[in-house]
Image: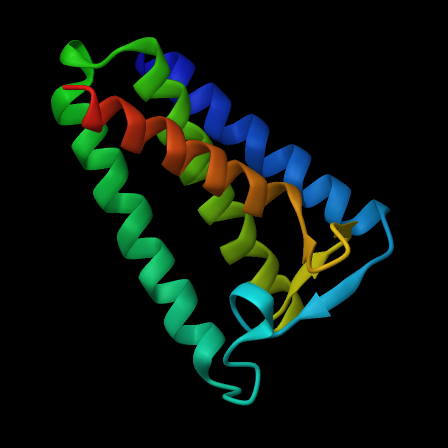
Length: 129
């Protein structure tokens, strides 16, 4: 299962970063809905927090991978891949992420959707235990 976990993470990061530079969109310097855009240092804190979160999730998964279901593995891999994708995007752009999927009320990207889907999958799996 660790191979599947790593493969999904790599796929999410590659597809996310590829689409961010193919499609036109907006640069979001804040977090969700542009919150915190007025603090230029916020992106550094987000990237550091993302690194801690990614390492924590990978350690958690590796320590418990024998007990985890396929659903949990895919969910956590989607989550981690999305976090990495947005963190790398912030590093490449100097603090912003490319949002190009327009949902009328807000713009989004594939990493955001992977994070949300992964969090729902992992949370649902934990809640059902």
